[in-house]
Length: 204
Image (cartoon, rainbow, N blue to C red; front, side, top):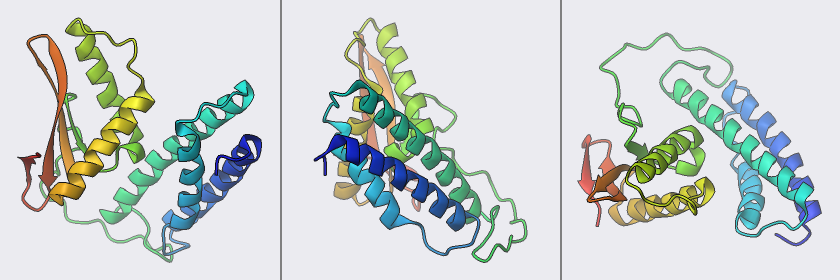
């Protein structure tokens, strides 16, 4: 990968159209399995050029547009998949299940607090990630810290790497990340979160 940029970006556009069609069929119940193969092919090209600036401005713009398009659709797919898992979407075969019993409301990813983010796969949770980034940036500005070199894509990748490390080491499903401002310094505090236990535990 990352051999011929023009061919790779053209292939990314084709793969993304295919992925959109496959996900729509899966989420409408026409197919049983998620299109993991197609999504992995898209991500392979996205990651290949994530840290390799494209010299051609038109290609760079097209790449950025395709990545934004993928992130937008990924957020929609994740939401629709959650709805289906909660019994609010069609099952395979197009059958819509009866409305489930409404128990106590589940904890939202943001806990209603913009300084907290319950993350599992940040790069696939673009809306939550963007909101959390904006909170972090705003708190740094309020603390008088520089935000000149703060970029959302770099922030997102760094946070995703940190979360994956904690998930792997702590063997947890998600990580609770908080923005903390103390003594004029803004930092992120991450804790392993185990849904079964319903609580967060400090991550080493």
